[in-house]
Length: 273
Image: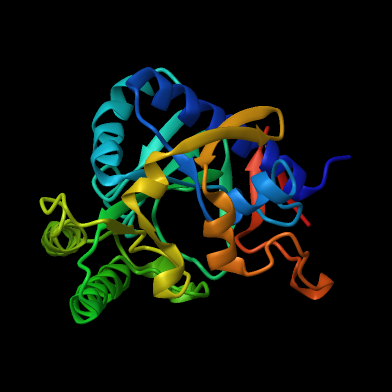
């Protein structure tokens, strides 16, 4: 009998296959990031206890993907969730959801659409001056926090939340204005094409850990990921060392726990650990 995380992995492989095919159709380079990049190199697939997939695209490619995906996915079981495709979705990056599934996440209660997903991050140009970097990052974080609060994102469920009605049109208009402002902050340096660095501004890691050169993310190679062949930066060793230190060493057993999903509904069944 498959475990919960094994079931999640199988669905996520379907999501990743769909994204890989779509990016190839559109001629858009993508690359694995974070724990998914680590899994590809250290485990040739998922980190056994990791329950998500992280993919990145440079901003121009990311925007092309978001523009084209709805048409390409129209007759598929997948939904590209973005700040504009789901008015209750507050995050600053996209998710590719399997619409045949439903999930409950740890420490993330909200009214956005739910389904087993993979994360798709834009990589945005950043200034070279550290004070300007800090200013951009701080403004992004403040706007992000306001959006999540207004869209009623919570760490734990609250019975009173179920008594609240949907957001009014005025509230949604206010949130959408904040989303547009957040987007402007993320992309404010995109026109400065001589800037050599990009960053995942939505990263949960310390600032410098997901700062890359454009060259690093433009030189890709293909590696195995379970039964798939996926794209990763050719200079993955430097990237992973920057993020994790000795990335081939396994963490202590007490740190080998899944981070996100705790309840899944699929195939008309409920699955938990």
